[in-house]
Image (cartoon, rainbow, N blue to C red; front, side, top):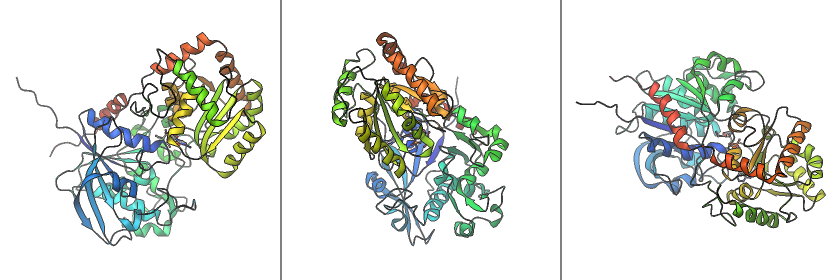
Amino acid sequence: MTTTSAPPLRMLHAAAEIFPLVKTGGLADVVGALPPALLAAGADARLLLPGMPAILEAVSRPRKVAEFGPAFGAARVTLRIGRLKVGAGEPAVQAYVIDAPWLYARAGGPYQGPDGKPWDDNLQRFGLLGWVSAQLAGGGLDPAWRPDILHAHDWHAALACSYLRMNPGAAARSVFTVHNLAYQGLFPQGDFRLLGLPQRLMQPDGLEFHGWLSFMKGGLMHADRLTTVSPTYAREITTPEFGCGVEGVLRERAADLSGILNGVDPHHWDPATDRSLAAHYSAVDLTGKARCKAALQREMGLAVRADAPLFGVVSRLSEQKGLDLVLAALPALLAEGAQLALLGSGEAPLEQSFEAATAAYPGQVATRIGYDEAFAHRIMAGADLILVPSRFEPCGLTQLYGMRYGTLPLVRRVGGLADTVDDRVGFLFEDAEAGALTAAARRAVLTYREPARWRAMQQEAMARDHSWDAVAARYMALYESMRPTAG
Ligand code: ADP
Ligand code: GLC
């Protein structure tokens, strides 16, 4: 008997961030973990990344695939391919990198300069990313490989879907994933001409958004399928409250829209092996966690008390994350004997408020302003609870990391937080109000005072499966359902 099996699906993931090389948030974690998990699932998954210095340096044995220009303001653009190994445990992924020094060889963040202002040529920087994606998908740049599926992440890569749609000869299908609808990539409409797309696309049923050019809309209008990073957020973004003005588009495309939860990378997030920690532990033996807590209290200048419930925060400090509610609830929380340890950076007023709270409550509140990967791990391990009181949260990763570390999440019931946290593993509140957060925190503290119950919750949380293998299987099912027909 002969069996015929379909060839492995080929897919190209286009994105602007990848952990640990370029990261502003969870997008980087996902882009670092999903392609290796797809490889492990038998797919031929590759990456396409802008050639920011850290990325160019990390690609091993780069080979030139194509050279062209001038394009998007760059005199010369070289497309290279090499191997990118982002984590100790993961297989290396083949990565295409756009080497365009004029656009990408800069000190500063991926979207902003050192002064905190967006780069003034972001339209060209991410227009090029979209254009190269679609060229690769159409077979125009690498004759040796072309993907079946072009998977674009967030507004930075969204135009890939528009360029691909404008190429009638391309067989590849496209997926656009919304990691955060609040960042849409808006530019003055006059700059549309720089993209080389047909003028008719600059309409409300194309890339136009209230007089602006919206990159995000390229993905929303032109991708074959839309996904976001949790089922609840997939529903929420079709409503005015969460839809950031594009809820109408998302409602129209509801049949093509689904939510697939993110996973946790076990090579980076495992309290039994994590090299950032003072001690190791597992669900079977949690004694090391107490040592991590004491070490964190010492490191941050908190009173070293095993009996004080320690709330941790690791977050961008932005309106989205609802940390103003924590500030408002703080006196009540501290009156319960709790402590707070925060690591974050972002909006200056929030940074200043947390620093002021640290000065007002020495030994009870500790703040570290900045971005520090190892320190984030020490908070995850040392805290008893991880606070994520977001106003909206597409998926959220820190509540998942907390659960892996036996650090119970206290979250608002919204987006991916609602899909990943329940009463058996954490504490939830409904309304974005300090009173609601305080009530949940009181419940958490009461539970904390019952060690047997607490331990049972920790063990349940640590046993929850958020492996990337399971996530990759869901994406594979989506890709298979859209496999281009042969011929
Ligand atoms: P978002 O992408 O909206 O910021 P996520 O919860 O999906 O939210 O992902 C945040 C990621 O960034 C996590 O990996 C978290 O550990 C990390 N992170 C956030 N702030 C900091 C910080 N100040 N230092 C180190 N890591 C941080
Ligand atoms: C975004 C969202 C966050 C999500 C991350 C990765 O930054 O804010 O909720 O976990 O993307 O998908």
